[in-house]
Length: 327
Image (cartoon, rainbow, N blue to C red; front, side, top):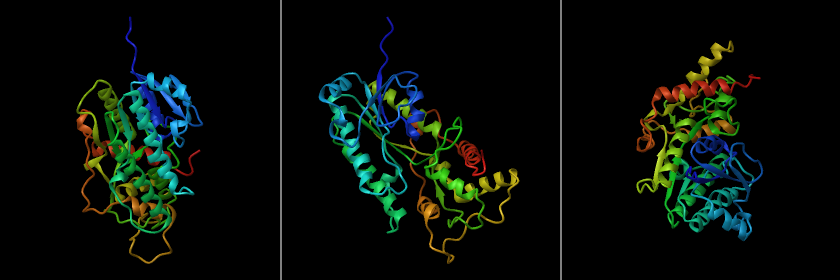
C-alpha cells in the first residue's frame, strides 16, 4: 500500500510567493489551499476562509475537520500594498491573521512555516506616505514574528527581502517593488531616480526562495529539531547596487533601440521637485554602502549560496519582462 502523502495547508496561494510555492509543494505533498476569493490551480483541495475573522470564518465543525487533516502549515497570506487606504490593515491581516493561523496550528498540533520579511528587522523613518506605509508594514511583520514565539508548535520564520519574478513567469507581478522600479527606469527619464549608484538592495530569485521553503517544510514534517527558528533567505553578499540596476536597464534600452538620453540615477542631494511615488519608495528601499549585507542562511538547506551571477541573470530577465512598451 502506498503511504499517504503529508498534507500542507497553504495560505496566500494566489499571491506572488504562494502561487510559486504551490506547484513545488504539490510534488511531494497534498496541498489544501486556504483561499479568500480566487482559487488557485494545482491544489488538492481549496477551502474558503478569512484571515481577518476569528476562527478564520469557519464553523466549528469545518475548522475541526481542517485541523485533523493537515500535517503542516505554510503561511504566505498577507497584505503587501505600497499604500493601503488604512495602515491599520497591515496589522489586521499580517499580525492578527498570523495569530489566527497559529491558533489553528496549535489545535492541529502541526509545525508552521511563517513567511515574514526582512522589513521586520528595520524601522523606516519619515512622515511621508511611502515611509508611513513601509513602517506600518514592517511593524506588522515584526508583530507576527513575536506572536510566533508564543505558539506551542514548532515555527520556522522565513525572512526574505525583495524577490525577482521566476524565470518561467510570462509577466512580472505589477505591484512588487522591483518590477515597479524597473518599469519606471525603463521609461528612460534622465535622472528620474534620486538614488546614489553605490546604494544597494537585496533581491533574491524566486526559485531560490521556493526551493528553500519547500525543503524547510519537509524538514519540519520530518521532525528535524534544527528547522524551527529564524531563517534569513536573502541574496546576502550577492546584493545589487543601484548602479547594477541602472546598467541592466540601459543595456536593455540600447538593445531595444530605445537608448537612454542620460543617466537614470540622480544625486538625491541635488535640489529637485518633491520626491514622491516610486522615486520615494526607491529611496527608502536602498541602503547605504556601509550597511552590512543582510544575513543569508541558504546553506542550511540548499547546496550553495546564491551567486552574483545568479542574481544578475534574474535581473536581466526581469528587466526584459518589465518593458512598458512590451505587448
